[in-house]
Image (cartoon, rainbow, N blue to C red; front, side):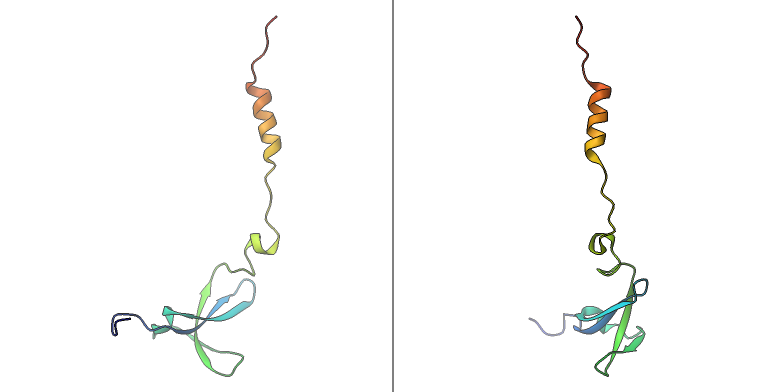
Length: 87
């Protein structure tokens, strides 16, 4: 990598306030100096960024995803637009 052209890459905490879930990872957002900070479980202080949806609150991952009854829709379409035989 060329030096001086890449943003800083360091540890950051992403927090989902709706689910009360947070995780520590690495990101280029660590270079932002205006970010609030939080003390993590290991005793160190990291920048924190709030996210609206994470794996802890997304309906697909939590099992609350509603399945649409597509079979019923198809049958209704066929009944409505099927050709009627003439005798």
